[in-house]
Picture 1 (cartoon, each protein chain N blue to C red):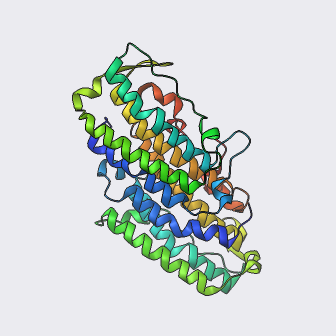
Picture 2: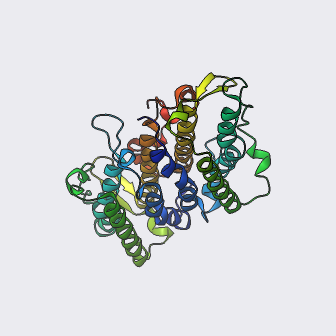
Picture 3: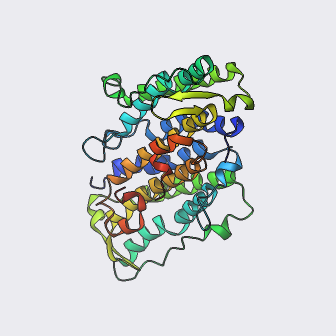
Length: 175
Length: 175
């Protein structure tokens, strides 16, 4: 499936509402759960998505428009949320994510990118040359990845609890 | 994590709203997408969840209360939705799932089960003896599994589109 704005934007727009329905007001035993030492809880994941809104997705679009593939993107800190989320509630994080995502989609709309711009090039600090279309489709796939991670972390809290049904639930198998 | 009603019910209650936020009004290129021949689309998964509401989760609770582990549950048809969903729209399926889930949680509440009932036994046609707690926690894990499946199916439509970022997105790796 090629990247198309009219298919990608409806997904990007709904992720905050999906996460608010999934996590808002849920007992902390679910939202603070992890899969093991060094893994992320649903709370951590929402913080990570916020950091992406602040420093990755739209800032890199702007960077590409300004510098093309001459200047690499500043690297993205995948774990910045451990400090940034400290002292905040999950409901605060969900609200912040919703506000930032809406503002970023407004910024994107204001840029008036067209299909032609999807071929623009940027430089990733690790991968080298990438395209606007790859970057924007990664934004979508990254949202979906982390929704998948959140439900997996929660499901795995019941790995033992489901007894023999474990055999039927592939999400419970170590990945 | 042991099964507790006050932790499981908030998750069971929200699944229809999560799926409506995730899928309602989305282009068919996402909701009819599959991972390959013989795999399920998001549309198929919602139909499968409906069939579970009709024939599995609460009917099996009632079966356990009536028969204990003397009579096995009727087997569950995992693919009944292919016929049952024919001619319906995804929005119709999402509404039906929401209505059935709400009605089933009302039926469960009306049974007034307590912690003691979690140890009640039933007989699975394949696994043999199972407990009420295993059955009810499987209901929760099954919801989460299928939300995870839906986001995985959608993310994988972009496996090529994301270019080199594929290396960072574990959801895109064949499972």
